[in-house]
Amino acid sequence: MKRPSPLPSTPESARRAATSRSAASRHPGSVDDTAAARRFASSDTDPDGKDPDAGGAGLRDVWRASRARRRVLSAEVRRFTVRQRRRRRVWIGVVSAFLVMALGTAGAAYSPLFAVEKVDVVGTAQLDPAAVSAALSDQLGVPLAMVDDSAVKAALVRFPLVESYTLEARPPHDLVVRIVERTPIGAMQSAAGFTVVDAAGVALSTTPDAPAGQPVLDITGGTDSAAFRAAGRVVRSLPEAVRSQVTAVSASTPDDVTLTLGASGSKVVWGSADRSAEKAVVLDRLMQKSPPDRAKEYDVTSPEAGVVR
Image (cartoon, rainbow, N blue to C red; front, side, top):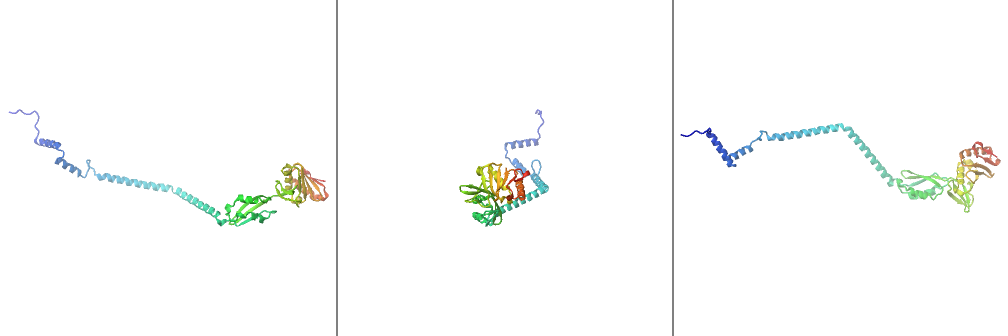
């Protein structure tokens, strides 16, 4: 008689299942495992039961939404910056037009279209305008904007009467030279003859004899002295009616300028060059009341009290 087992007996079906699992573990490449792998690979769902195409569809939707959002933002930016962009276009147009105009003007000015064909000399009284124009003939054919000022200066230096000058371009072809001549105040006697000078002491011309219409200057210290500068200021302040009657000017110091009038030899005690304009007016009135042929001396040292002797 068999003794009963202390554990419950295993059913037959359970034993067969255990046997199958044991065999499968010993042989991994069995037919059952291969079939299961094929069924898993051919299934249309992932292990979680979700459609794999669903993930791709979600990414496309996100991409489309992002692109639409960027379009909206760009439209908003364009809408709020329309004035700024309009102003920028206007400024770009203005600057471009200015640059084109400037370049065109510069190109035309420096081209042969505006070359010098005529030199006009104005402002001369003692100089010959034709001689000055001929001295500047080397500027003919030069564009107005490229006239050489140093060459013009070198040409005009040969004319002592030229005190200053200015150049004026008159397109398309005229160059105007405005000259200010030196004003002679008298003639200084020297071993070479009589030299006409202006108030700055510049020698304008030299002749053997005293030039007509120019007073003879007797100045202590010559043209470099303070007495000469005072005499020059006095002569230049005289009105033309009085200036034409002066035949001699003398000064030993800046404070004792004396004039000699006409053939009568009447003297004008001028004194210093201070208040020369007032003294000239007083002298003119005194000479009208007492002409030089009836007066020996006019004293205008003090303009408030002119004296006739």
